[in-house]
Amino acid sequence: MKTTNIEETLKEVFGFDAFRPGQAQVVERILAGDSALAVFPTGGGKSLCYQLPALMLEGMTLVVSPLIALMKDQIDFLVGKGVKAARMDSSLSAEESRQVWDDLWKGDLKMLYVAPERFASERFLNRLRRTRISMMVIDEAHCISEWGHNFRPDYMKLSRLSAELQVERVLALTATATPSVSADICESFDIGPQAYVNTGFHRPNLVMHMTPCSAGERDRLLLARLAERPKGGTIVYVTLQKTAEDVAARLVEAGYPARAYHAGLDAMERHEIQDQFMAAADGLVVATIAFGMGIDKSDIRNVIHYNPPKSLENYMQETGRAGRDGETSHCDLLMCPDDIATLENFSYGDTPTEEAVRGVVEELLAQSDTFDVSVYDLSARYDIRNLVLSTLLTYFEIDGILESLGPHYNEYKFQPQRSSTEILAGYDEERRSFLKKLFAQAKKGVTWFSIDLEKAAQAMGEDRKRLVSALNYLEEKGELILKVAGLRHGYRFVKRPEDSAEVVKRIHQRFRQSEKRDLERMEQVVGLCSSRGCTVRQVLAYFGEELDGDCGHCDRCLGEKIPPMPDPEEDGLSQAEMKMICELMQEGHEALRAPRQIARFFCGLSSPAASRARLTRDPRFGSMSHHRFATIAKAVLA
Image 1 (cartoon, rainbow, N blue to C red):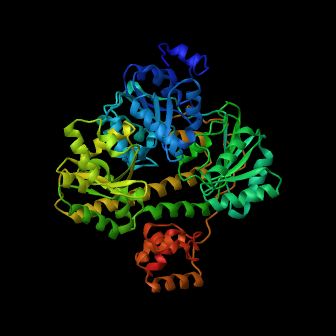
Image 2: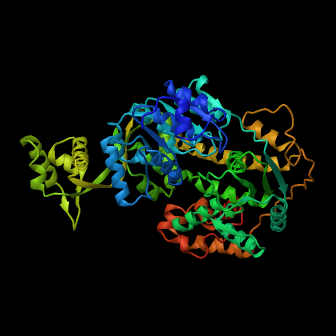
């Protein structure tokens, strides 16, 4: 599809007569060749900011988002308009996946949607290096910032990757960036002030209500809110999967058409619930935060937090799904202080022990100048979750100790589509000899050949990259089908620290600071609910936006009666629970040596070691999830 005029494209392809606030400014900066940051509220029209210019630029637009599976409607729309667009994710069938690879090899794709983890694929990166990428779009860009509410190590590497892949411009998108996080994003991608577009967070059509309550009052309040609020699509947000099931069941008993939605349901059921909600005028879903991402339903009238969000960023993102059509919609938060323990426990559970950090640091510092590691193996060996281990490795890069050399796979598997004689016949003597030696290194299985590239390169006296290029070329030509396994990440020492203990202390302190920031964000939510001042004004101030006066449309401004915040229940362990802790410690499980490991176990937070030892199947696992993590850890040390 060839397009040359912005207004014509907007009308003919997307069906709009005019841009929404901020869109035109972003599109103009992108078409002028600049990188840009767009901070738009949820539902503010971020996708048009890259879809439209993508059609007008030469080359491919690469969209990086953690929500690829939920962008199917976007891609279907583009394909329906004749745009060669595709996504690459695990939900594709083998045939669909091969088609996307074929289109990528041929250079036929105009837009490709991928998750940030896709850049761990050596094959994918090799192909991108041969592709003209006119624009890289980074959705949920706040994940780049270490100081943001949802830092993801894969995101931090996107700045380096965009330079390595010679991306011509970057468009960063987010709905929840504070001023400091926005500054981080702009610095990472060299985005100038003229290309930073923030349309503001104020949504006058959203009426915000925050009601402090006890756990015993909450169900009554939920039913009262549903009866009082206008009819229409409603999302009730909860923290845990079990809560979603329990609350949905109680609402059904009360006569509401409620459905529970969470990540524990199979994909088919989740899609069926989502489709039903989209089609219904007054659908009601009780959901964990797994629901709502990528939902493009403009007439959601009510968003109710049965459990509190874990931060003001999450609150803005989740309430932002209401009233996208501009009509009055209500956002209720039923603030029970006892719920904070559950959110705290997730944060505590992610923080590795100092012993685990020391083990990883000392193993890394003992490596040669250039080395590679398996995140999966390190995670299992030191009982640190994969994402947390990846963050630890990222800290080494941030501190200038290591430089990433990118991912690679130990083992390649291939399935020839013709006999080796037929494949080799098409090459000159030198290449034929090289391929013969390469094929000779492979071991034949039932239907697949496997080859260890490190050993093969050493045996052949060749550079490993040449072997990878050869296999990729044969796949591109349709001579064989490739599979890869054994992901490892390569690193090179930039500088070797003199004191490993200092590195351990600094990295562990970083994790503790991250944990502390998470807890502070939760307290900000409690503080907001306790306040008697204008709710909207306080939320906007957090994001750097000042109102001239009170909003006039939140519950505080409307003069609604606000009950005092109840005191949280005293968090003490019973004698039976203390006995259970003592008995577990006496059993001497290798996976439960440290107080944090034991506290994780009783709070129901899985870890690599506990999962491997099948301790997550123990009936005591999660039996104290209603208690605070710190209470259990203190009891272990007593």
